[in-house]
Length: 261
Length: 248
Image: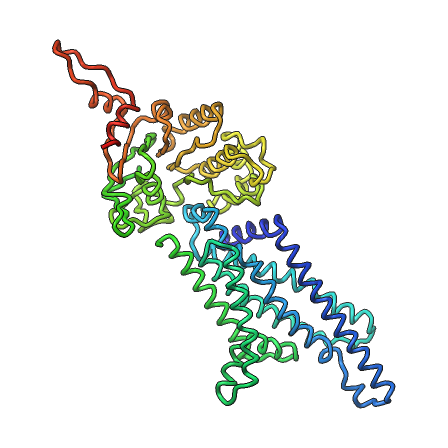
C-alpha cells in the first residue's frame, strides 16, 4: 500500500507538472458550464411560462433535480467520455516509451502496486474534476435561498454515479494505456471504446425484447441516469464495479506480462 | 555475490545470449565488454530481473532472480542503457520518489537523496526539471538513482556515456571508491575505463563468453610468441585482445 501511494504521488506530481490536468479541468468546466447555463435558461423559461398561464399544479412539479441536475449529470457523463482518454493515455504507455518501466521493474514493488498507484492517481484527478462542478448546485442553492431548493441527497447520489462511471472509464483507459507504447494510440482507442459504451444505448431504442434489455444494460450512460434520478440500484453498482475490477485485473496482467514479450 | 549459470535468451531463432556463465565475488568490479549487439545489455537485464531468461539462472546474494525477485531487487541498483528518468519531474522529486519505492525510511530519505546527489554532482541542478537537462546531466541523475538505498550490487550499463572528460574521471573515481563495499558490474565501450577501474574483465561476443580473467591474466594469455631465446613477447594492450577475441 505504501508503495502504491508512492506511485500515486509521483503520477499526481507529473499530472500537475504538465498542462494536461489543467487543460482537461478547464475543458470539463467550460463545456459543463455551457450545458448548465442552457439548462438553467430552459428552466427559467418554463417557470415563466407556467406562471403566465397560471398553472400551479405544473409549477409544483417543476423542480431543480428533474429539470436541471438530472440532465446536467447526463451531460457531464458524456463529457467524461471525451476527457478521460487524455487523462489515462500517459499512465503506462509513457513509462514503456521512456523505458522508466525498467526502473519500476528493478525496484522492490509489485505490478499490482504499480497498477493501484496509477489508478488511485487517476481517481484523485477525477474527484478534482467533479469537485469543480459542485459550483453548479451551490450556485443554484445560493440563488434559490430556499431550504427545499436543491435536493442535496439526489445531487450527491448523482455525483456518486458520475464518480463510479468515471472510475470505470479510468479503469478502461488505464488498461488500454498498458497495451501500447504510444499515448496517441492509447487515447484514440480509449475514446472509441468509451464512445461505444454510450452510443450502443441508441440501438436499444430500435431493438426489442431481450436484446433491448441487454443493450440497455451494456450502455454506460443509462446506468448513470438512475443515480441522477436519486435512486441506487444494485445492478448499476454491479455494472460499474465489474468494469473497474475487470479493467484493473487486465492492466495488472498486461504490466506483468510486458517483460515476457 | 552474483552467480550466472548457463544463461540463454533467444528471440525466435536468434540467440542473443548463448550459455553465459560467470561469477562475481563480493566487492569486485567486473568490466563487461563486447561489441555492439553482443548481448551485454540483455545479460544485465536478465540479472536485474527485467527480462526473463529462456533458460539458465542468475543468483544475486544467494537469491534466485526469478524465484525470489523481491529479495534481489532490494539489493540491486541498476542503471540501464537509457537513464530511466521522468522528464517532467525535478531531479529532487524524482530521487525522492525512487528512494521511497526502494524502501528508504521517511526520515533518512532527505539525507540519502542529498548524499547521492553530492556523490554524482547532481546537487547543482537538483531543482531543475529533468527534461531540461543535458544528456550528461541526465546520465548522472540515472547513476544517482542507482546508488539510492545503498544497494550491495550495482549493475551499470555504460555509465559514462554522454559525459565530458572531467565528469568521466569523476564517475570513474566514484565507481572505484564504491568497490570493496559494493559489487559492481560495469559495461562499457571505453577500454581505458576498464583498465582504470576494473579488477576483472569479461568479454562476450555474439552471446558467448570469450574471455573471463583478470587484466594481467588476459595479457599473459595473449602475449606474443616467445622469441627464440625464451623471452616473452610484448604484452598486448586490452584493445588488441578485445579486437582479437571479438573479430572471430
